[in-house]
Amino acid sequence: MSNPRFNSVLLKISGEALGGEEGTGINPKVIQQIASDVAEATKIGSAMGVVIGGGNIFRGVAASAHGMDRASSDYMGMLATVINALALQDALEKEGVDTRVQTAIEMAEIAEPYIRRKAMRHLDKKRVVIFAAGTGNPYFTTDTAAALRAMEINADVILKATKVDGTYDKDPMKHDDAKKFDEISYMEVLQKGLKVMDSTAISLCMDNSLPIITFKLTEKGNIARVLNGEQIGTLIK
Ligand code: GTP
Image (cartoon, protein in one colour):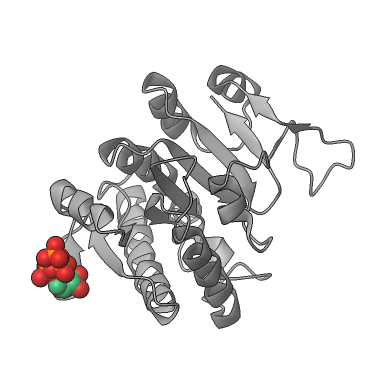
């Protein structure tokens, strides 16, 4: 193992990432690729927690916009993250990575409950810990769950894997003249309304001085690149 840039990281993967091009369902090839990238990155030696979204299966916010009760739709979204967590655990274990899933909503037959000290012990043993079911509360996104868990496990940074290679002043998929930031402050992200993470997650990171690195997930080896200290993506601090 090399001397890692970070002792401990929290990787945030969106649910849509597992769906590949369509962004829905779980694409076996895509999840295997993600697992292989995470497996490579774990060799660098940083302890790694993972928070995964659920938008490929169910989007709570979208359903509530169509009239569904917000709390119910958010709980459905949380259940979707558990499905993704189990899929990712399976894919990671096929890559030979010891993995534990902990869920914020107790379902003991399916996964361990979230117990911070137990999670820390798993991380000490270099197991990847996947935190499922968000924060366990409606009205909070999985980005906020990522910020919360990152703080709880004393992570040095949140690695926010995205579809594009960093944070831009406008959507680079829609605007050719979108400008990428190498570095930007939390306050600017909030003031400019950049869609990095929701404002609750950004505020939590700002208040606790937890840096965020946004980078492109689908480029092979990118997680390892970030852990090795290569300046890719955007640093938010
Ligand atoms: P150490 O004892 O620290 O080495 O951790 P461990 O995770 O190997 O030990 P433990 O005996 O706690 O867990 C063994 C296996 O059972 C692991 O795969 C855990 O994820 C799983 N496990 C532990 N607690 C629960 C639970 O409440 N529910 C479910 N479904 N699985 C659990």
